Length: 72
Ligand SMILES: [Zn+2]
Image 1: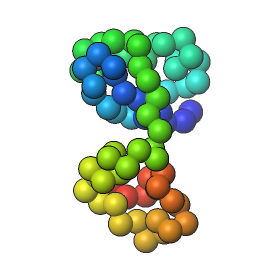
Image 2: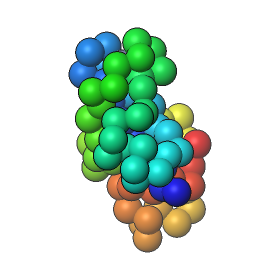
Image 3: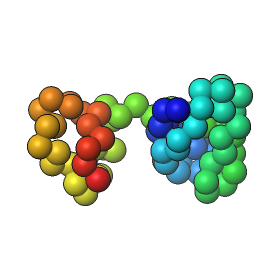
Image 4: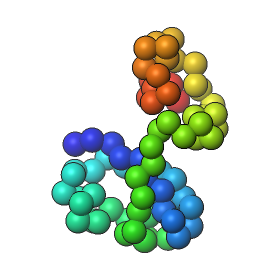
């Protein structure tokens, strides 16, 4: 199962979750903050999100690109 990076438009909480495609498609994933099921997918190219991470210095980051998950 893949990880999804999701944002809740109700409370603006961003989180990632390990869920099946069916869970996401059928909106069985709920916001950890307010419980809303109406979640948006966050695309990791968003610079603000990357910069907010403490450990963004993956040694392979030039290969991984902006979506690098090795750090943090
Ligand atoms: Zn929420």
